[in-house]
Image (tube, rainbow, N blue to C red; front, side, top):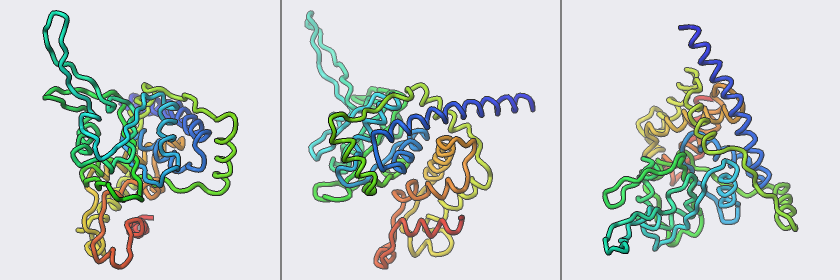
Length: 331
C-alpha cells in the first residue's frame, strides 16, 4: 500500500514538473504580445487551469480582446467572440433549429450551432445584453451543455468563457444577476499599463511588423493540466485559511461582518479558491499551495460575490477595503 502511494506521488511530481514548464512557456508566449499586464495574464491562466470562467473589467483599449485571442492561439483552443448588444437574442448565442426540405420533399429540423460552441468564448461587454440573453449563457457556463427545442447539445471540452465588462458608460447596460456573477471563478481588473510598458506598446504595435502569438499547448494538454490541478495536495493550514476567509466574508460572521456586509460568498467561492490556489502553485512550479496564494487570490475570487450594506457604503467603504481587512486576520 505504501509503495503504491509513493508511486502515485512520483507520477504527480513528474507530471507537475512537465505541465508547469508548458504553462510557463505559454505565459511567456502571451507576454510577448500583451505588455504590462502580467498579473492579468497570470490570473487568467489560473482561472483556465482551474476549469473556470473569468470576468475582465477595464476601460476600452487595454487589450482585453487581444488577450483572449492570444490565449486561444497560445493554448491551442478554438476561440470565438460575441459582441453583446441590447438586441442580441439567446438564439444568436446558442444556435437555432431550421426547417430543411430534401429533394424528395421531406421536411426535417436541423440544428445550427451558435458561437457558444467554442473552447474559448469571449463575451464582449456582456452587461449590454438583456437579462434574458445573459441567462442563456448561464446554463452553458455551469452545466457545459445547452438545451434547444428540448434537445441537449454538449459543448466542446474544455469550455471557458472570458467575459468583458466596461466599468464606464453605464447607460444601456443591465447589471449581471448575482447567480451569473457567481459562475465566474474570478473577477479580474485590467488596469492601465505603467510608463515603461506603454512605451514598449508604442514601439511594438506601430512598427512595420507586429509580434504574433505562437502555440505552446493544445486542448488535450490543457485538460491534463486541469486534471492535475485537482490532484495537487493542499495542507490543512491552507484549507483552514480558505474556510476562515470565506466564512468571515459573510454577514453572519463574528466581528464587523453584520455592519459591513449585506450578502457574502457561498460555498462555490471556497471551491473556487481551493482550485485557484492549486493552479497558481502549479503555474509557479510548486507542488502545493501556500497561505500566500490564498491571500493573493482572495480579492479576485471574492469581490464579485459580496455586497456592502448601505451604512458601509455611506462611510465610503469599498469591497476591496473590506477584503483587505479580512485578510489581516489570516496573514
